[in-house]
Length: 199
Image (tube, rainbow, N blue to C red; front, side):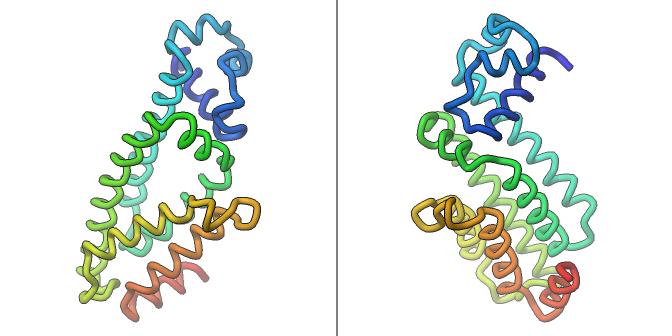
């Protein structure tokens, strides 16, 4: 693995564990046994490093999504597998990571969040159409509205004014939202499949 990749990997690990603000370039250098100067030879500053880490994370997430879609037999399997993967990810990331990203790096968070929003909307729209064709989702649902509602509910989960981190487990809120959402738009056949997969 190249030095640059090792820096990205270690920075991401530390950011996930401690949040972004408290992690220094020194901490990252020490973590992989290189000099701070080497870190700065690869990244001009911490902002560039944070941006690169986010870009790499998004690429990995996209690859994982494609893998889940290619090995799943139907849309409900795709959504429940994505839910389980999402819970695993949530449990491995400190809430400070997203807090710091939004508060101290809005110039990174905002455009990447908007880009992700478009991508996720398109993906959920496609999955809803697929689910209707498979007879798993009700054909009378308004696909455009339901896609937007789904994405907005995902955003709502990370809203600390509604779900404070000291009162709610992020993973529990995410799971409740996903299961209720999928069951709510499913046909009888779809609901039976959800119950079977969750049993």
